[in-house]
Every structure is written in C-alpha cells, then in structure tokens.
Image 1: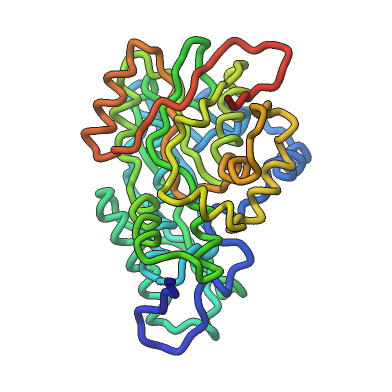
Image 2: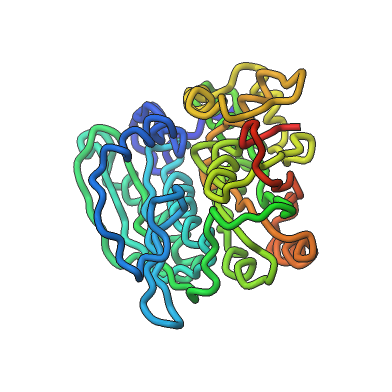
Length: 357
C-alpha cells in the first residue's frame, strides 16, 4: 500500500495529517453555505456583471467591452495527498478549472499560500509552489503574485483570471429540456483520497488519482463555441449530484442521471464498499438529499460515490443532441477518453429536481 513521503527528504509529518479535510472535501456543505450567503447584504448589481453568485456558478464574469469579458475565480484547500509537488499541481489545476468551465481561456494567476512554517520546511513549501507553477506553465499563464500567511493547516490555491467573448460565456443555468449531459472525467477522487489517508491506496490507484486531478479542463473554451452547447459547469466539492442539482435549479429544469453510464475511477466502488468514504459525502447528502430521487436498490456505496467530493473534477456539459458529436470529438481529441453521456435534461415537474436511474 502507498504511503507517500515528502520528496524533500526532511523528517516532517504527512501533509494529509495536517488537514482536517483534504482537497474539495473541506468545502463547507452546500446547505450551510446557502444559509451563510442568505445573510449577506444585497448590493446593486452593475449591468456589466454577466455572472454573479445568483446560481452558484463557477466564476464571476464581468463584461469589459463588446469583445471581451473578464472571468474571475478563486479556489484553495488543504492537502489531499502527501507529496508536496502533487498537492501543488492538484490545487492549481482545480482552481484554473473554473475559468475553463465558464468557456474562458486563463490569462494569469495569483497564489494563495497559508503554511505552518514551524512544522513544514521551506523546501517542502517550495515544492508545493513549484507544483502549482508547473500547472500554470502548462496552462500558458504566469503566477503574477499572491499572498502568504502563517497558518495552522497547510493551504494552497490560486486566484485565476481569464478572458472570454461575452457571447461564449457558459453558465450553469442555461440548460434546456431535451439536452443531453456529458461528463468529461470519471468520479471517485474523494473515495481514493479517503483510502490514501488510511494507507489503503495502491500505487497504481494513486497514479490514476494524480492523472485525473492534474488534467486541465482545456476543452472548455472550444466546447463553449459549439452551437448547441447550452450550459457547462465543473464537478467539484459538492459531488456529481450537487453540481447536477445546481444546473437543474439554475435552469429551472429537471436532470435525470443514468447511473450505469457514469464513469468511475478504477476500483472506486470497491474502495467505497470497504468504507473509504469522506465525511463531506455525508454532509453533501444531508444538504440536498431531499431533492434527489434514487432508483430502487441504490446501494450505500453508490450513494457515497454520487455525493463524493471531486477535487479537480471534470466538466458537466448540457448540449442539444445535434451538438453531441462535436462535443465528444473535442473531448476525445484532448485526451478525455472516459467522457460519457450520463443523462438528460427534462422540463421541471412536481417531483425532485434530480432523478438517478
């Protein structure tokens, strides 16, 4: 079984031992988050703000002119793995993903760094930053600055900025009845991270986890330009069910997921059946389970995977059936071999917003 040691050769605690919840699993549960946001004061919304927080979208979008809109987002979290370089890569990939999910191309990043400087060496912290910078370089953007603090837990992430034509902005609230849903990456990252923390993740499973969490969602801008692609979001801390629900609520529709078609990381179900489940999975279900209709016989392990917090997850794309071939072609060309049609969008009825078949 894998126990990833620091690549710096120093005698330090495992990074995951310093975090009470790793990766997107440390996000505040959606129900509690909604409560907190309801208490926020309302401000006048400028006409140029094309996307704010009204539908819990992936990023804010502000129109600069007729040809350009600025996309702004931030994301950071505690370690999901023990290797500092991999932690930096995963956190940076996850942060930039929100820019791609809006249909934009990233232009620059700012680093957000909180480290227990009396616990971790400067070499380890440097490897985290190096990992994040390597992903930014792969995305073709500079790390143009940032902010650092001394904190109890290790925290790393980015502010990510991008540009998009206003006509190509893809919200999570524009899905239409009749659309099909495509998921670009397999799920199960949270389950694998739970197994890693318990020392129950095999080396090949770890490599699979790193491969999916460090794969940039670069198809986003090209998908946004396809006629018939109506909505897009990325699947992260609230799990596939939570982000599908956000799409359904925002669009005023109902989403039906075909659970058998949802791609899973290899052996993710077996790991879940052995009890490798994050606490965030249960918190997610407690927050939105009342809005989900499960098919008869849906197992506890499958429910854990449905709500499993995805760190740096895939894109969830709602498109007209006529656009499906173009969408799949873009994803296949970019190496997203697991991309699959996982469901459909229908008109809202009297029942739950999300149905799992």
